[in-house]
Image (cartoon, rainbow, N blue to C red; front, side):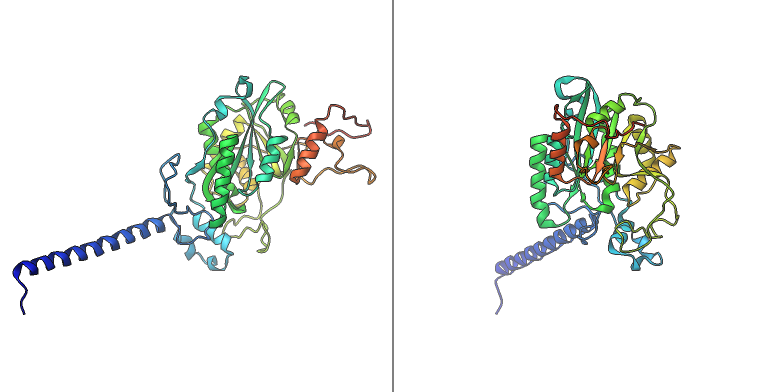
Length: 386
């Protein structure tokens, strides 16, 4: 039985349309798959990989894919490295990530009370989930205020939560914080210990573009107690356009080669057995001059997984050195007698920074040292200023 020519032509047209539709759908799926693979999202556990987004975020700059450096996988011994070391080697060249939450335009051009440019800028590295720490810092030593005529401004530096389901909640939390406080600077990379250097480098780029004239920078963690009033008094005797990089200096140490250590550095990451001098312990103070020098050096030095050491590498590259300040305590404050508690506020009157503070301890100590009725015995040794 033969179909009429008209019906035969219609059937051929419908068949051609169906084939074309199938080809279009297949091409679209292939295009999306290629785009997502270019962004590195086929391996979700990779620490530095951009994650695909199902909504448009209007990033500060166009999204730039970060490609895997597959050549390093061919290096002898690569497959025997821990996963986080492998990921670092595969993606350490990646330095361009979109900003999810940015500081308001007046973060550095404006100041509380309109009393001039920023004197001390607090750049505080925080994990996405650490809301309680950020909240207590805002209420205590991280208050944006004027001390001795000097303006203090604050910004928390964060990445994204690696767990996809948790990231949805935490990103919403950070968006609320940004709207309420204007102090969140968040990039779209996984927040992890080995990505702290990436966070540091991205902040240096942001600071150079948006806050280049801040006189001094406090670069610290969210688990420290920083006596920012004392910092201002100390820094007012310094010049912003001269070298200043003070903290707790660590010298004559090298990479830890024990794989189970948090600070393990493989020989594939660094062959040398000695680090340059650097400041550790959760907080450092930098002048405008030194901040610019480190930012320049960071363009020449590949990322290194331990951020404190990386800053020491940048200093060495620029012919500069870190200096110690006795008021920065990285292992807490020790009482001269077991009968006196080490949490006595009299021991904190002259310090600049103490590492390892719980959030509630920040509130208690800040309240105590700001109490105008605080009286301390002369037997309490004051920390010398360097």
